[in-house]
Image 1 (cartoon, rainbow, N blue to C red):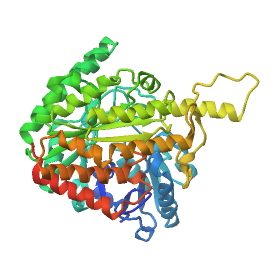
Image 2 (tube, rainbow, N blue to C red):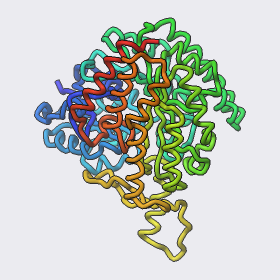
Image 3 (tube, rainbow, N blue to C red):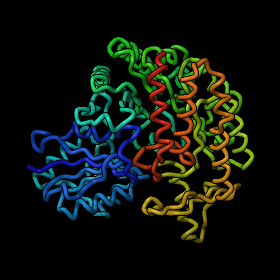
Image 4 (cartoon, rainbow, N blue to C red):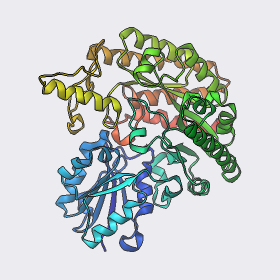
Length: 503
């Protein structure tokens, strides 16, 4: 009997990971066991892919995003040498479906694989595999439950559960709304609860709600919707979400806690915000601050975000409601100067965010910025008799940079800041925010016992060491190993969290 391997490629392998790559366990659920048996799951953050496991005729499914293309294509090459059938999917394959085929893949799955993966496996076994399978945007009621019986929970800090797909925003630096659509699609409540209870039975107590936007339909979002039809749709989604929160609260043990990402507009909807904390037990959330300036938010197509002191007040309000904030700030937006980046450091500290990340602006495939900057790039490379006006003053410097294992840190030529200066200012931002002085200042504003403050300091140390310069992303995209001290810091932080923070 042929076997199916599902591989999450990674730049590094360290033996454990923080977040389970959910897609592996969803496709495991979609794999037709009756034909191939349970799939073999390989997350290269945990265990490197060994081609010797693969026999001729086996099927190897590889999921890639832009950050892990190089190891992904390594796995593809190794599997093909073993005469396996290789099928590639993921966000990057959805954006560039021809590229994996050029690299030797037998087939590509675009969009979500919940429905079409089983079809691709059956076709491969029957010898009539098509080159492309369009998974598209799967309706909420057809999004699969992950197959957690295949999880080795000792290898992960957090499990990932999805409650809603899609995001109604259209930020210029983000590919989510391009690849997964702007219409939020709520999963079936009983499927989510089933999943969470299964994870609880496995000993999991901390979840990442892997929704690109946990707050797709707050009162603030509804109020700024211009289309009456879409506004009505968002009102229905909001009611569905609140009903789901209520059912979740009744059906899931109270000592399992959630972390997620959401918009700042949560403060516009006190009922929704309270339900997130009380019913869903959300205790931390990443919020896309992006910039504290109006000009920066305009360049990111996120002008609805609060500006300056208003964002500071917004963050404080969310934390006063019991949800820690990880502020995500982009450094290097087109309007940025050295002075604006320096001012963002000041705002970040003033906001009291318990965590913050200062990410280097990079236009990635699938985003509006990447599309427009690549048009400018090609215009510069092949000037015509009638040149067009560039859409951006920022210049992207490299085509297909993801194929280079030694790709440069800075992918752009910024109109106002030299690359070395930009990198230096980002490092300063991380160093200042996570200095002992600032950590102590933030900890002293809490009512935590000493153990809680120790937990927080250790968490800051580990977070800075792991994500400084880049920000939190898929673990498989990390390019540096975590050293012993910050690794121990994060593990000790979890111990302290388990010991004291339950409410």
